[in-house]
Amino acid sequence: MQRSMLKSKLHRVRVTASELDYEGSCAIDENLLEAADIREYEQIEIYNINNGERFTTYAIRGQRGSGMISVNGAAARKAAVGDLLIVASYAVFNEMELNAYDPRLVYVDGKNHIQRIGDRIPAQAA
Image (cartoon, rainbow, N blue to C red; front, side, top):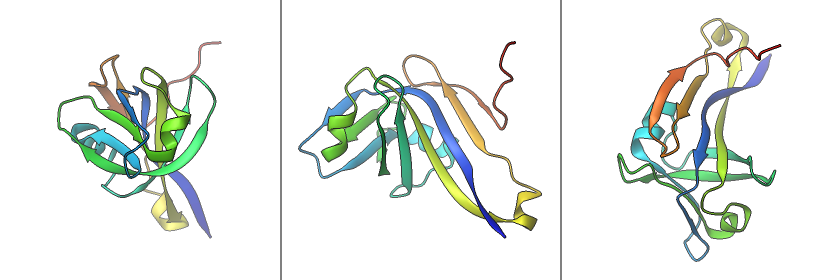
């Protein structure tokens, strides 16, 4: 059996640009791409916390250290500057691979700078 699992996510990144006339994709600070193990041109899912939009695009490299999250092309209609997003990537694992599976979860501050990286979602308060 194979399972599609969360590979990595960037949690609550803030949109810094929205370029409707750009070719497409989402430009992400290279530091964030590396931290989340997302490769350039890899398919990503984007979940907009502000408006509930969910859409698929691909990642491209943004300027390292800039905090850039630029939603481009048609997707620019789904996210405005200042919106908070969850950017997720998924991978397919077989049962043996799942024995060593841990997602890469990247948490940022208000300027999209990495605050911590983990492999478990913190428990919710009761």
